[in-house]
Length: 522
Image 1: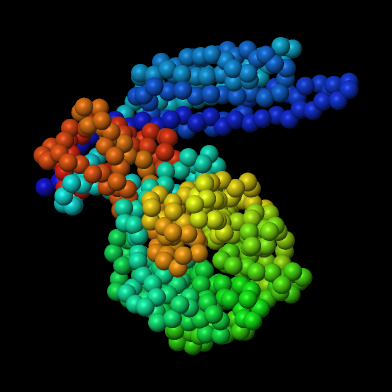
Image 2: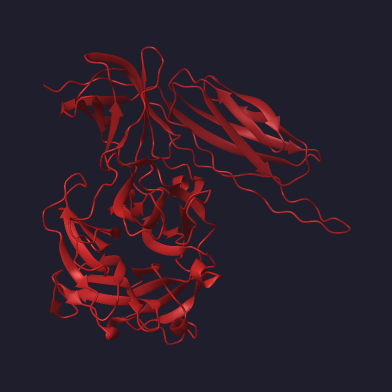
């Protein structure tokens, strides 16, 4: 019978900061205006020790900080200043709503004042509901999947990526040639259709494009099938697929042209997911499927291996195509089309030496956010550091910002990862799928691995020892190994998927071999 337990909830206060701009010449101009950023502070819940740094910009150092009016929320006070910053710290102890203003003054008596209103909620409820049995020696926590896409979390780059406990998540079918990679999960009403490339037990080592379906990435339906055969090319792989509102599917792959020995993107479309480019699957790729970019003078002579991404944006098709490390100079370019496979180049979006493998668009408030995933393909075996995935953000899809490291391999089995693609569900990024092996990037022994974007769960037993995390099991579950039979008294703390924002904390009783559903509510 289901049981439930209450947990105190905590979250943290966020202050948005801004910087002014100043310059210098002879004679020096007046200093930039001293400012504190205007911040819209969210409600926050506090039963924990809290620290927040607020920063000013402009004016002349040193700065002096004071509370101009009102009082800080109960239990908080201004702490030491450092440079142009002041720290607010303490342990709030009462539910309250307080309005206060901070003042900063510089050495020339410039002042800046900003008012804040903060609501403190003392507690909220988190329930752990027993859901049934799992494997011996395991405790499973469910409901840990990430929330809607958060630009702030992606910008601060503290995301909590949890490796799937299955290494790999999906292996090739038995057969003469076993090697699969380049996964592309396409969201459907009943789950996901998972496209991928490789050999998958084929009789010859020619890359082809396959697909299967899964409702949850825990089980995979027995319908894996060949979709695009290599046809006129040696290989067809690096698949990504978009689906429009009319149900039609549109695919970009990389094909290897002979005798030029150059990789180029090719385009395939389907009105029903079964017939591709007018023929029932498996469709044999043809020369006239190759993408052309007539206004790019370098396109015909360059190699675009594994870095070709299709995106439906502003009522037309956008193609991101990459010249990576093989060229010696790199670059990710953008082209558009209303009638693929012919595209028109619009410019360079990044000078990266990495290959663009995925681009997704999200709408947050009044802004568009584009997330580009990138990978490096040529790394000498044994290289330190190992191959790493990267990502870059944009608000217009035309210019992408600095690259940030996403993650590297998590085990001996996935030390050489390639071709990442995001698992999305509506506005959520649930995780990233990728091909990998444990030998080197050119080893034809890849399988498909998963890394899930999840809430961070910390379980500490009554002796004060933290319970190690075994990993994620699909996008919304985490496994913890436990050797103790019978009830286990523990403290559980839950953080958001940024890995740092506390959401809940409480005393719980857990039993080895059981699964629990985690829910948070006011």
